[in-house]
Length: 148
Ligand SMILES: Nc1ncnc2c1ncn2[C@@H]1O[C@H](COP(=O)(O)OP(=O)(O)OP(=O)(O)O)[C@@H](O)[C@H]1O
Ligand SMILES: [Mg+2]
Image 1: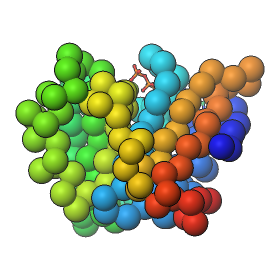
Image 2: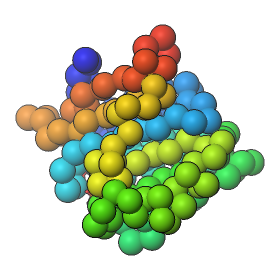
Image 3: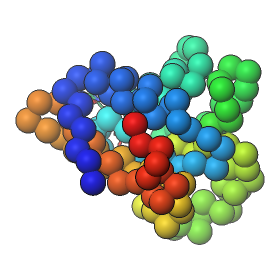
């Protein structure tokens, strides 16, 4: 377990850049943490680091937003599962199909049943810190030799 201080958005951006360089299809980035802790901010910086230019809307209402090459280095599904009332709804909205060949960036992953059992899941647990935020990094097996 590693704790990474994120005192400001620039630090969030630096972390996102390091992770983005190591992403491959099938990965999950599980962004945990309370309301307003900075999950969408990190997702936005990840998408920018993967090449996306322009807006990154929060998927809090649409639940899923997709990004495809060539605008990004690899396909990305950005999801916010907050509004799911039951984890089974993730399957009903076609999450498995969206995920095929893509990276999943998941806010509120526990509302979709959680992804920590997947080897290629990197969990980033965001917390309020004395100075800005901090991220607790919890890598799945597939991330052990890939960690920045
Ligand atoms: N590293 C950071 N240091 C200081 N402020 C930050 C940092 N990261 C994000 N913030 C600020 O936190 C606020 C909320 O961020 P964000 O919308 O990303 O949270 P969220 O976790 O996605 O919230 P929600 O649970 O509602 O989806 C924003 O004002 C953002 O600027
Ligand atoms: Mg959000």
